[in-house]
Length: 292
Image 1: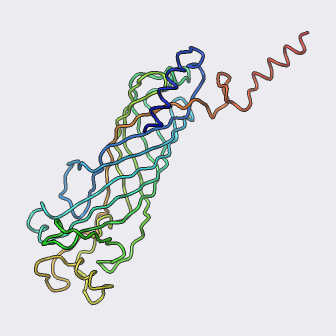
Image 2 (image 1 turned 45 degrees about the vertical axis):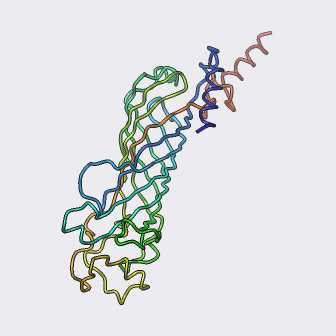
Image 3 (image 1 turned 90 degrees about the vertical axis):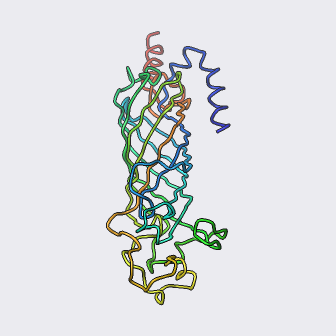
């Protein structure tokens, strides 16, 4: 964040030159933060947003004045529990939390294009939609050692224990999509507010999926058995509903982002001093040479 702000301040001083502003830029670096909300078997249904932290960084490249490609890395927290659920769910006594990473690539389409194709002539407020593909980590944990899963002190990773007798991978695919708004804050800076939903293909973000409790004899260890059935007291195997395999888990990221136009352009443009080849410049040189 310090590096990002330092670059923005130094570039702002340089931007006092009119010709510096006119140099085309179509690559954006971004930094953002916000909250992450989990939807799954351990959370009551609804649209309540959790105050779990989310941090992201990314790069964006404008292919056209209206369409861009973006790559991002997100770090976010998720959690869910039966502590405040209604009676038919609270008896399960299950809970989880996790620290997750996500990498994604997405395409963005903006409502308004940059006027004349110039980044500094973009509109003051612009709306956009995005969709793409991504990969995220699944590593739910819980606590033991207390009278309930909510006041324990020892942290235990649930995925290696296979509490339902099912092996699932740490890396899972997802489909991110959502909407956002960009607010221009000078030639090089935007402030964005963005909400993005993640459709996943796993029901084990929370380590809960199976309809019935597994037979303890089929599980890997005594600890697996203990964390598979946390009812007090545990009931007979197969009695009671543990999860709902009909719907996969998902999550939602809400962010405030700072976007900064980096001082170069990947496309050939006669106003960019960083271009590799400029046909117009070669033509002018030849014209002066042969007009003598």
